[in-house]
Image 1 (spheres, rainbow, N blue to C red):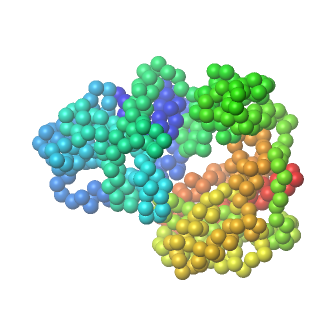
Image 2 (image 1 turned 90 degrees about the vertical axis):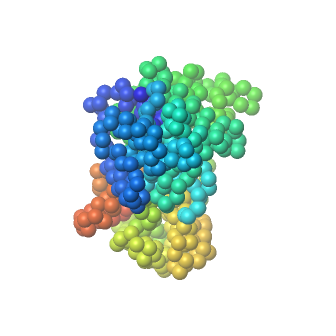
Image 3 (image 1 turned 180 degrees about the horizontal axis):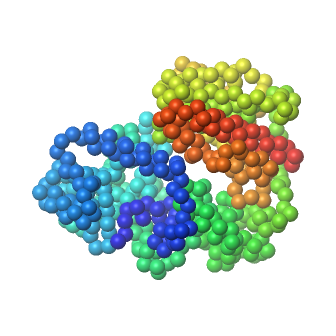
Length: 492
């Protein structure tokens, strides 16, 4: 049977579907603690939503799988208004929608999500873009309901963490540049999952940031490194790799080839790959293939020269909608021996706790108007803009814009690493580059996702050791930013 969970997994990584079906279970990693937290929060939010529905809900979640199928069909035939925890199947499709809702004599499926129902948008306003992994899930439910004769067409809902019932009209085009609808997208994904589950198509892993949360991460990464998979080249993703692999099979082959031989007129022979990007990827393949390779500058970089430097990193929990930590390492005269770590920590998830931490950080920075501020990626700027809107009494928007305008501050990733440097590494994350330069985090599991899980455990327990773990991790992130800055300066 093809399940909604497999379609969800396929959207993120088709190879995960293959490994879940055919992989050696002994090679799976333990479930990532952050993933477990997501599951726990999702289950808790689901119970909250169902509890608020009151009486009149046919609850089937606790029955055996076969009983749930029989009772779900019986409840729909009897015209039940709301069915919770139903199980529906038709042909080779199996769905377990959180809710089945009777409207105008038909049933619409809904899933309860502890995240937002759509992508993007401002804090309290979505931009109307459906989430692909949600879309294929609820499309399968609609498909089964239609095959059973109970469906209302190509429509379903997501009940999200904001309390909204987001309609998934699956006959809408996916975006303005294509006539492909979400239903077309679902049918294409379904066909591909079928061939994978039938063993007719062997998929390949591709290195991406989401891999770190997958239970096949260690196994899959090992396979890709052993094979020299092209997706090991930074920013060369699955789609480009798949378009190249018949001509260039691995990183070593790419490094040894003449890239100009794949140019045809003003394009390359590979779909979605322009000439300049192909040359850049070829250069990166050569770096990865040379054991003596060193990082280098692609263009001149001008960095601020100030007596005081500040290295800045925040920690946020998007599920609780809070920025809970602002960390700063202050350095004088370029001397690491002068480093001093300052943190503003939200002692709870209330608006007031977040506001106090934000105000403390803004005032601290304001007391150092001549310091050069360094951070890694646009996330800090994005979140400070949102915090300014959320807590208007702290400062006006001009203060935030001035803070994040060079030369007052420098985004080391987008302004420097991404634009002007090359490294013999599989990616350009702060963790990867700092470790390449010899820095070591104190924690054995350093990641932003892990810190969210630690913060949740601290909220539940108040354990000072957990809070200190979060602070140490944030301080190390700030110090890692300093290490990368020093590494870049060594290239100048």
